[in-house]
Length: 157
Image 1: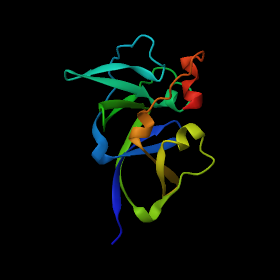
Image 2 (image 1 turned 30 degrees about the horizontal axis):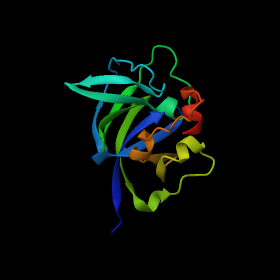
Image 3 (image 1 turned 90 degrees about the vertical axis):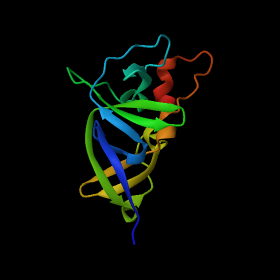
C-alpha cells in the first residue's frame, strides 16, 4: 500500500508550494501588520491573531523575489513551529492535496539556492511540480555578519 501525504498548497509567483497539513494552524486573509524596528525586511511585522502575537515572514523577500505589485495583498498561512505559530505570507492559497510517495523526487538543481535549501521534496503532478517546504528551515533566518547590510539576507539565505 502506497503512503500518501496531505499538503496545504499555495502560490508564490510561478512557484507551487506546499506545507504538510499537520503543520498548518490556519489560513487567513491579509491582516494589518505592526512593523518591528531594525528587523530584516523579510520579517514584515507582527499580526494580532485573536490576542496571540504572530510574526509574519514574507516568503517573496525570503526567496529573493520582487514584491507583489499594485493593490494585491498576500495571504497568511499560519504554521506551527517549535517556537510557536508563524505566518508565511504567500500570493494565493491553493487546495489541500493528497500526494503519493511514488510521485516524490529530490529538488531539481535548477531551483535557486535560496529555495532549494528549504524544499524537502518535490512531487511531480499533472503539468506542474509541488515544492514541499521544510517549515523549520524556511523560518530560519541567516545571521548577518558584522559590516553587512541586513537587506542582503535574502541573497545569502
